[in-house]
Length: 215
Image (cartoon, rainbow, N blue to C red; front, side, top):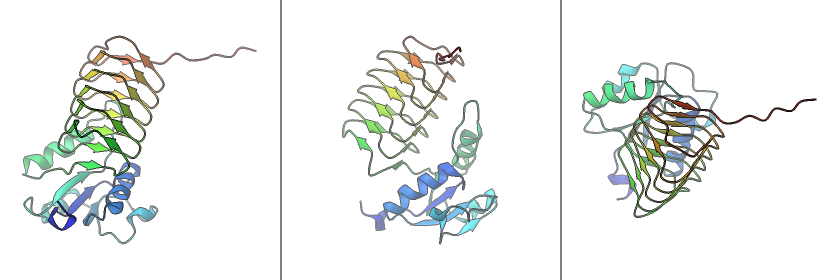
């Protein structure tokens, strides 16, 4: 499918996460009709030349039949804003675009579900499924046969070894490592730099060890 056959896009959010998304989309020559954000976006050059709308309900001026939405709101642990926005617009009949950087390496035998976002430098191997609306951030490595739930955020440089299973709403911090055959249940949080060697239960937090230097 060439770009002329793809729906134009409306991006929700104007912060750092949205800027990375828009950078990917502009490199792919996608048509972006508007950035929807209550705050100023002029400080980020990547938004230059794009229409800026300031109210969430401005999205409703675009028919669900003629545009797709892109959620440019990032995800922090225990923050439900990203899901709340998605569910609101999905209930009105809108669809969310799946965004995959041209500089990500995604196996032809992996599955990326609707609304997921895969950033530059990420590697997703064969047999892996990335759930709907999940963020796979820059430089993430997801090995073979992972089952990644919906609304996960896998932060930059995290590594998931083979056959990891994450439920919905899981957050994996930057540079964390999850070894093979581990399950992270719904709402689990893995701190930046942690090494996970056993299952993490629902809403549990896995902290990394810290180095303490004593004088």
